[in-house]
Amino acid sequence: MDRREEDEHAEARAKARLRDLRDSIDNIDAALIHLLAERFKLTGQVGELKADRGLPPADPAREAEQIKRLQALAIEAKLDPEFAKKFLAFIIEEVIRHHESAAMSR
Image 1 (cartoon, one colour):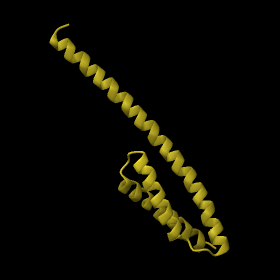
Image 2 (tube, helix red, strand yellow; image 1 turned 45 degrees about the vertical axis):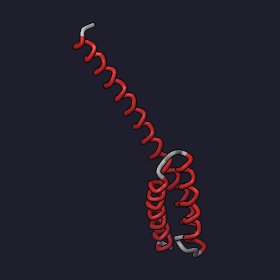
Image 3 (spheres, helix red, strand yellow; image 1 turned 60 degrees about the vertical axis):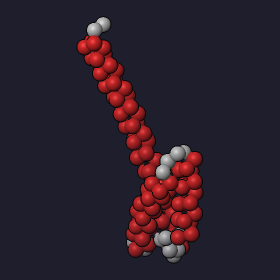
Image 4 (tube, one colour; image 1 turned 180 degrees about the vertical axis):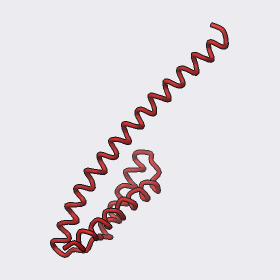
């Protein structure tokens, strides 16, 4: 095999590996979307229960506890804990918005 053939073979292997990696990423992204959908179904039920009972939409103590817990999990998983904090804060913000909407519809 000459140098050009070796380069072409290496390029083909790299493209196949890239495709495999991207397929795996796509599968994980799909799983994340489904997990988030399930999470929001449950937090929707929490929002309805809070609205029915006149409880406030936000629970700062619970939110702080969750952020601390997920940052610890992120460290164990070798994920940037600050990223985990920002990600959860984004989700919590959306959940609170849903809870406020549920309370206003009562």
